[in-house]
Image (cartoon, rainbow, N blue to C red; front, side, top):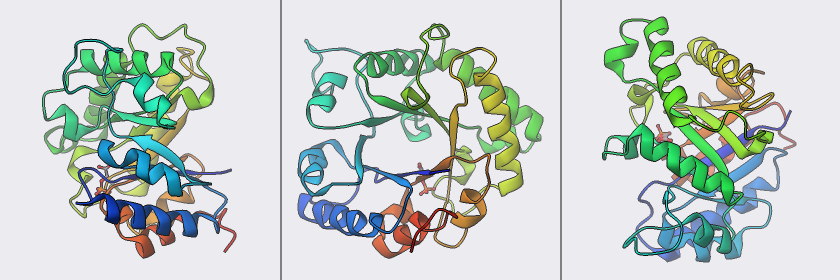
Length: 252
Ligand code: PGA
């Protein structure tokens, strides 16, 4: 099965020139992989990055819950679509820590899906919860999913309308990735949550949090894990290339 590998550049790099050259390097290495690759650069670089992409799809790191109108500083789903964006990351823990609530996340998901953007919803527990055990973490993640997805139970979504990324907060940018076995347990839990409620049949769930060239295969070769959301390592073309090729589907 094809895996989905998403590069989340966050607020990097520091110039459009560097963004384009990084995108070009990733596009070149994507040729050797059967996996689906997405690059999510900062908003100001989207148009320039799009020009060098062929196989690789364009993603955004955020979207407004509103459509066009008096919303200073916001970027809408329509604007992203018009730029050629296919995927949007919603609810990343770094945005949650900036004050984004589950209610806002819920509105953003609805706005994005209505405009045909593929949503990558990030969920995951902080260490204060995880240290109490995996059951406590499951409860935390279930509550996030319930709130974030409220009201879309009957939307009859297609598989790629809504992808979930399990990103334990304590694993993001720390070099301390989750154990693949624990990530699998949580991903099974998330899939079980999504399935019977008929949010979506056969949902895709990614793992994110300190995925590196060294540990990527341990995650990507698991049948339960449908791909990876990669931050830091996606800014290093050689390392990201190894991640792209880490799954058993690599052709080179
Ligand atoms: P990381 O970030 O790979 O640097 O841990 C992942 C993410 O924030 O999506």
